[in-house]
Figure 1 (cartoon, rainbow, N blue to C red):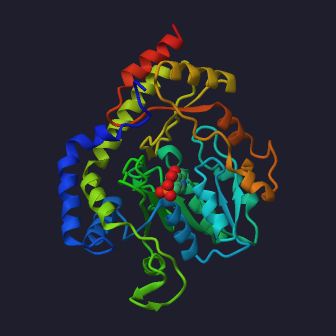
Figure 2 (figure 1 turned 90 degrees about the horizontal axis):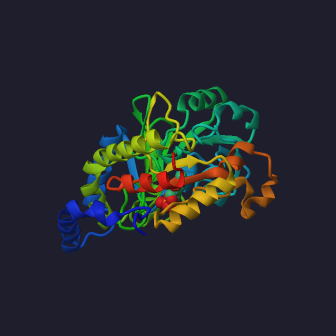
Figure 3 (figure 1 turned 90 degrees about the vertical axis):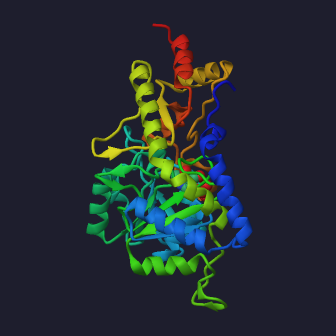
Length: 366
Ligand SMILES: Cc1ncc(COP(=O)(O)O)c(C=O)c1O
């Protein structure tokens, strides 16, 4: 590919030496599990996000699972969420024997549509789990107000949204709990899997600190059955080097997104950004007029060796594994339509956006 979908090597070049030193320090210390690097990373990221507690864990998927456990989700409970997200959002709900209840998305932001939430609340509903898809925060004021009125918890899936803001607050810090992923392709990526849960609630934090360590706060004493979900000290040391660069990288993503949007708005529906939001463009997603047009643009980009992707081709309510939930085609029309027409073009701080735009220009000569 002339333009890859993501170029992690380019990001690493200026910080490679610092990372090597940090990794060597961990290796020399022999402390690979928990310890100093984890404590430092958790306090640095809590202060970056402006939140009281940051609890690291093994992945964003585990962050979701642990968060749901912390609010006592049990088999038969219902959790309201978006059908337009990575599988892990709903997978975590199902893993606990609870039921994902999918609510259609807003056609502008691709995030859960709060005006459709209340009609899906039942006596079994325990929480709302909005996803800040592609790094654009969901409509948190509306979601929090429904949750407060109906006595529900809010868990934010901020796995794609680290550094983004809603009404001046960092996404992930607005609900009861926020979940983040450090999967290598994320805006803040580790050299492997990693995750984080944030909360301002002391009781939830104390539960989560034990839950990731087999329900234990004192060696060989177990208060409840948790599981093994820790961030490696090596990953924490890498993330500590990268964190100070996150805002610069997110600014560069916003710059590229502006260039893309001003250039492409005549051909596609470009990302909508709400006025009280600062997005971080984990993905830059465009909507074509039809599935056919989308597919021909993708073929063309491929022929030009410009990477592209479809996030997501199938909404979660129509996944085979959720067939027993009984959703049918047409139940969530906006999400289904978006899945047919959406596609993403490369966005990362160092991307050669001009080459991407030149290529799209030759597909749509003016
Ligand atoms: C929206 C969303 N939720 C959850 C996850 C799960 O994160 P992880 O891959 O770290 O388990 C991801 C990332 O892959 C994601 O994009």
